[in-house]
Length: 71
Image (cartoon, rainbow, N blue to C red):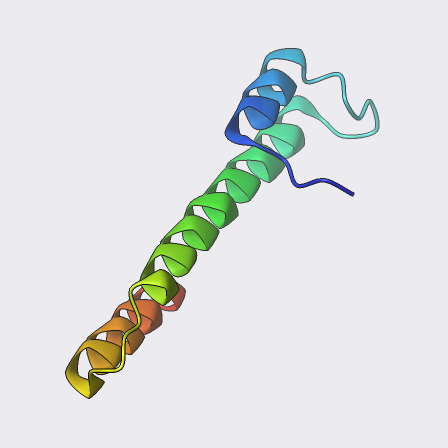
């Protein structure tokens, strides 16, 4: 299954008909949570990409990851 994009989320948000079993509020809440998870994933990927052999930079990246997971 392909991952959703920000554009997909925007489309679902516009059409809220993706799950008639959920209320509008429940659907909006799920979409907001999904959006936040996508942002967290992007931050995590960016932080991991910056990991280098220097321990000081590795430690700084790990601290940033900790802040991303535990805001």
